[in-house]
Image 1 (cartoon, helix red, strand yellow):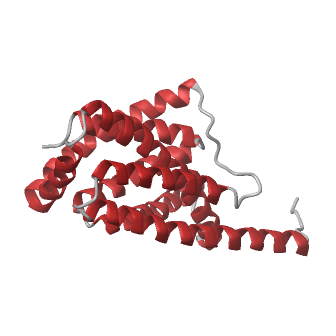
Image 2 (image 1 turned 135 degrees about the horizontal axis):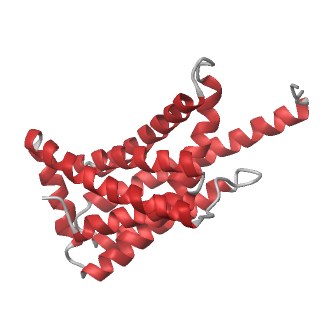
Length: 235
């Protein structure tokens, strides 16, 4: 049985998409500038700027989510979903280290840009790196990227996908599109290793969101992965 939408419903839907689009555009440009400055102006204190960027990213995520009548996806997490997020983080960490080693053999710039970041983070004790970089910043990033950006991009891309695509392929296509935006954002850092890490992370966390429909799950996975990268950096 088909549902006939009223003109009022269509206007409301279009207005919501416009509101989302404006907020996403403002957030994307503004956050790109903040993170670009954080990673390229060496005269600024690295961690305070990065943490400030993380807080602004999280707050922006909540602001963008409010463009929806009912903000989604949810932050709720069940024990099975939390367990899945932990497993995903561990596999992501292992695969990322393997790919980093391979990429470093081909492009030495991978190692160079990664060392630049780790040298700047090394000015803070490990516990501070874990708390500020791993828990706070990584967690707040997810509020915007998977909690707002991915879902709202999907709202725009989904109607333009071919009808012949199955449900799984459509879902994967949406993950790829949102990952492209996530990786493009990291171009502002001018760090090759971070751009590559964002591309892989976007695929991992986007897929996890697709499966669980829980931003809480992607927060767990992102936080754990970041903490592992701080404790066991690639060499």
